[in-house]
Structure formats: structure tokens, C-alpha cells
Image (cartoon, rainbow, N blue to C red; front, side, top):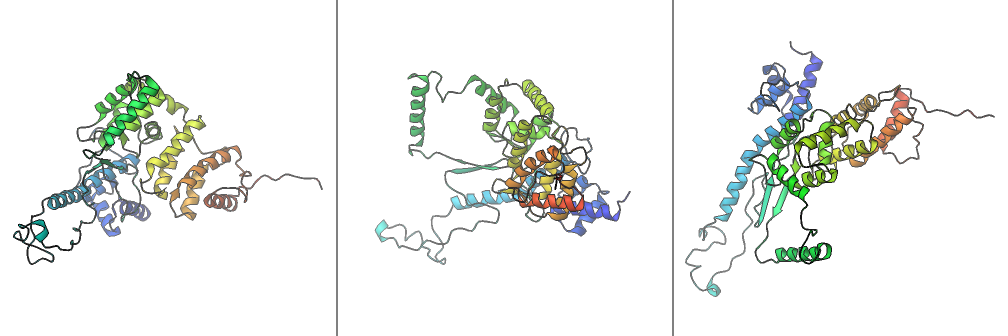
Length: 423
């Protein structure tokens, strides 16, 4: 059945925001896909419809996970040509001919180079080689490792929920002395902390660390970087190994434990350090059991929920950005403030619904770290006092929360308690 005009407009807007296509193109692809969002998105990129779990598993078009995985797979397809251009350019620049054509400015023939160095003609250096858009100039002794390039929402704007981080590994140059210095530091630490013969020095990994490193290696896919788990390996680890539901706050609990730099990416250091800090044995069974125990406490343990809430902002934003888009901030709020997370609703008011209604009507900017963190503090206080009497004009709340209080009082009739005083 064809959707109503309003529904079609909503679907088209969502398709445009996800793909950057025009509204007319969005309507055409949606119609051809029988108004199924996932099929329409896959069609525009000629990708097979896939999802976590069984290939035959059907996913609702509003499923957060389907959108996340779709973004990443489309980005992987879009980035391949660009990476090839980068490699071709790097290869071309490392195989320059030994002489230039005489017709080029500043060129000399091979004969001119055959004489002694002092007799060779000197020429001004030419301009640096042009690099295609989207590529980085090749740098000696550097190696860029990318688990998955970040995706863009719309015309090169917005953020992806399941995004990834670029990591640059700088190689050691022979003879630079860096390795020797590191060895000397390790010796000093060993003597100071663990005796002159090493013993259990600071540089010696504990048995638990060794087991966690082995466990991390067993979870990596064949295409993953040595110290990073990509989207496919991370998804398999979360859903199959740990049995986590990726559509609710369970996912974010795991991301906080391993200090994931992005939702959908796990690093070796974060995995080892995070699980080591829990004191849990290095087995998938024990890890899954620990996650379940944390999820049960998430709605009642404010300290635990606050840790998960705050790390969600870190994993949600781009590495070089200081804010996340309002659209995705709302998705995360709806995920965190819903079971098994902490519910932002009091006896008389569903504050999450009021918050979303206010943002839709009054707020168009992105969400920075201060707004994100203070929203949780405001949420705690609103449950203690649903008349919002705790708020004052002299408070240190962000302006968006000041406007929210004014909106609640004007639009919803939420008035502060007043004290009766004798004349």
C-alpha cells in the first residue's frame, strides 16, 4: 500500500538525509522499492540487502542498526575508487623518471646530469605534484591505517553513528635512536619497580593482559588491522559472542567498557585495558555474564549510567569534531533513556517526549559536549522536582535548557511551586 502524502514526505526526507540524493530521486527509488527504505538505499548504491544475522532476516526501515550498517557498507563502496587513486598517485610519484623532457620548465636532459656535480645546471624546484581531491599526499615513513572511512550524511554534512577513526602509525627510522631510548626507559622501570633482573617489572604484561590480547586476536577478522576490529568483526562480537542487543543501551554499555573510539570499532588497547579494569576473566563467557549484570543495574545505578551516557558522546562524534548532529543526538537520547537504560519520565510528565518536542520546534543547532552532559544533570533534577522549581535564571544551565524551561511553562503549563507567606 502506498503511503500517505505526509508519510511519503517523511520517507523522502530521510532518504535524502542518508544519501544526499534529490527529493525527486528519493521518491523514484522509494517507489521502485515498494517504499522500503533499506531496499531503496541498497538500490541506489547497487548493494545487496544484508544485515546482521541471517540473510533472510527482515529489518524494519526505522531500525537504527539497519541504518548504521547501511551507512558503513555504502561508505566502503564509495571509498574504494578514491583509495585506488591515492595508491596510483603514490606509485607514480615514487617512480619518477630520472630526467625531464627538455620542453618542460626547469628540465634538463640526462646528458646535463652526466657531468660532475659542480657543472650540473641548477634549476628552481617545480611545484609539488597535484593530489586528487579526497586523497592525502604520500608521506615517507608513514603508514595510514583506516578500518573504515567515515561516512557523511547528506551533502558532506552530518555524522554517522557507526563511524570509524583514522589511525596513523609512524614507522621508526633506522638509526634514529628512538628504540634505544625506549629500551633504556624500560630498563630503568624494571630496576626501579621490579628488581635489576627484570622480575615483574612495569613493562612486563600480566597474565590477564596476555590472555586478553589472545582473545582480541581470536575476535579479529582476516581483513582487520592488527590492533583494530572493524565493523563486521565488532558486529559479530557484540551480537553473536556477547549476545548484545544492538538496538538498545546494551550496545553502549560494551562500548564504554572497551572505550571504543567509535560505535562499531574496537581497538586492542581499549579492549585489553577496559576488560582488565573489570577484573573479569579473559573468556567470552565471563564477559557476556558481566555485561548482563551491568545491563540489569543500568536503570538504577546512576554512576554506571552516567559513565555510559558520557562515553556515548565520545563514540558518537567525529574525531575532529566537537559536537554531534541534533538528529543523531536524539537517536542516542531515545536509546539511553529507554529500557534497559534509565527512563526520563516522572509521575506526571514524560520528559523525553517533551524534550524531543521542544528540540523539534525550537532547536536547529548541533549538540556539543556541555549541552550533552548538562542534559543528563537536568534530567536527574527534573525527576526529583517535576515542577522545575530548581531552575533559576542565575543558574549555570546552558541556554538551550533555559529555553526548554520557558517552553515547558508556556506551552505545557508546568509552573514552579510557590510558597505562601503570611502578610
